[in-house]
Image (cartoon, rainbow, N blue to C red; front, side, top):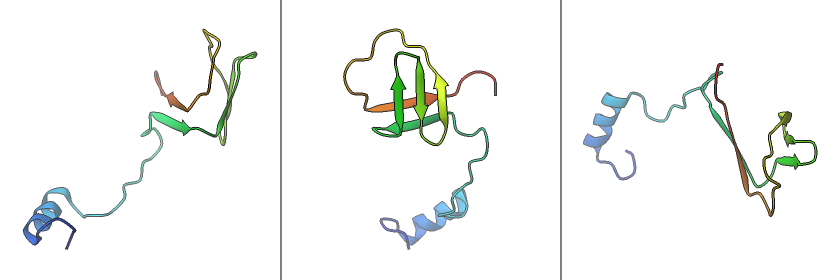
Length: 81
């Protein structure tokens, strides 16, 4: 029995949703964003490079000088795939 659900609720959930607890595999092209929280990235402002761990370097446009500490980076995929 699931926590917080009665047996009637869990039967209804199994019938409407499918099997409970199985993880779906996210294949190529399912993810549109990557999050780097507080580590795993370095920014070279002089050359306009962003180094991401396990991915590599990529060119970025820096319109203003970055001041202070960057806490997180979100990389978003847009355009044609």
